[in-house]
Length: 155
Ligand code: FES
Image 1 (spheres, helix red, strand yellow):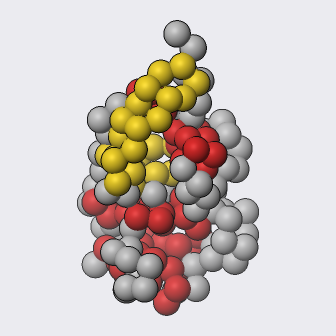
Image 2: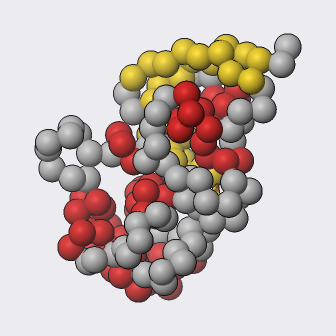
């Protein structure tokens, strides 16, 4: 078959869809679910703009086939804070406090990757954070402030 039925949980909500087998998780989120917070940069695994968490692990949405995610738990930038009017997630707040973005296009991916970096315990030093965040490119060059934000939220 060229399409498959997939049931997965996205930001706490169970979703079932029929998708073309070639559909990436990134396109599933953006085109099928309208969750456009996750960004498409290169669509080839090189920039990290599409980073989301699958079962609490960081993945590039553009490299992940949606049909492989039956039963998975996916968290996107939209699902990070508890509610629309509630407090921000600590790392979102840290990005605001540290002024860790300019154009903002890479920010959702940076934040989701940063959450993974913190969960994995790779926040011992700025150098360690840089290494474990090396898959996330920022064309504006906000790296120093991004590292500071991750240090703030991870401490
Ligand atoms: Fe997925 Fe660039 S859009 S890594």
